[in-house]
Image (cartoon, rainbow over all chains, first blue to last red; front, side, top):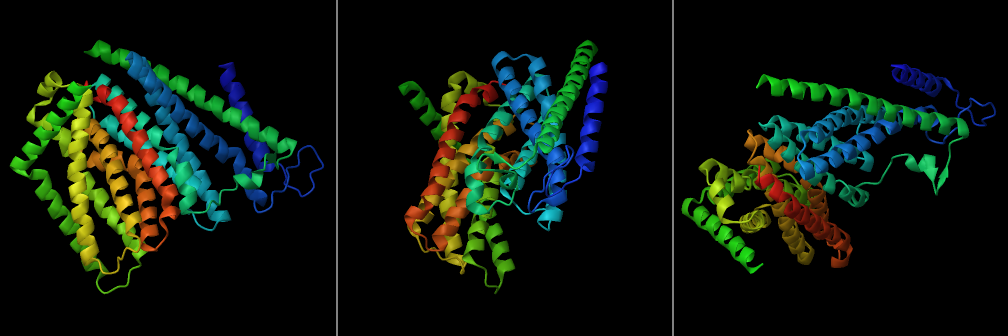
Length: 228
Length: 224
């Protein structure tokens, strides 16, 4: 209960700070954010978009790990965690796509440009979509769990290929190089603190929702066993 | 080892024989390719379409004909109720590789047919470097067969088989499709063979990774 309130407060502070702290060319006060050439005020998206993308990946990896665990041990609880994590991952994936797309409209001029990052998140969306389409098409709990775990593993294996393929097709526009170039981060301390607290805040939010979902799924599972 | 190799060949021969009796997949697929190609030819009309664009269109035909044909391999076993028999007579490994070989043969034949028709009838499509083109078709066929066989095995256990197949396959085949389209573009723009090494490296590693993971996971699917 207390943790929940603290998390709410934490994220509220991040949102306020992320939106209201001024961006100046020469940061002097403790609350000044640095000026990133080419990004200006639009740099604020980093506090929200990057954590979304990070949580999307994290959710997929957790889903994958529990999928593998399910295949190894065949305990239905692992599948509950795996599918709940995938469901949350889908939600965060949509959020990351929408925030990124909105930002792209104002920076690159159009909502969608097939930038390498856009393509990889699009593929992740497709995989999540296909995963749930598959789940809804299979009857029987164990069959559903096994086949969706197998699918998640096969799909997860193919994702890293995009790292090698996409640069051959289109040039990247993604501004990670404007922020991090040659191992140097062009964020001042304030920006870094807000960014890292946002990252940890959203990660905590993810684990909190995941915990809730897994617990309700467990109850539903118990109920369905009683009903039989 | 020798035993499972023999079993693999037996499964392959069984599939080949049952296909030759009905010619279900083959006839439908050949007609599918002809239909799709004629739609493309109608829509091109007298337009001048760049060979780069046409190399993408070629792979669209190949992708969708794969999607309409290769799902049959495992679905037909489920429909005829012969899955249990297969469980009894062969190991999962032999079944997977037998099916993969059959799919490879089917897809290979189909792709040769598609490519020949495409080269003959689509006038704007002229290949300048055949060594890249042929290598791409061969590696692309191998990768497509490998990717679509394991998805076909998953699909056979689901309820809505037909529509789900392309939905599940697309994200997995996308790295392959992007790379083969890129390599085909290189072949029509007259690049040197060494320029497409990068593409071939991706295709070969994709093929190896996908076949290895299918090989490891097939048993779980098959036992459901």
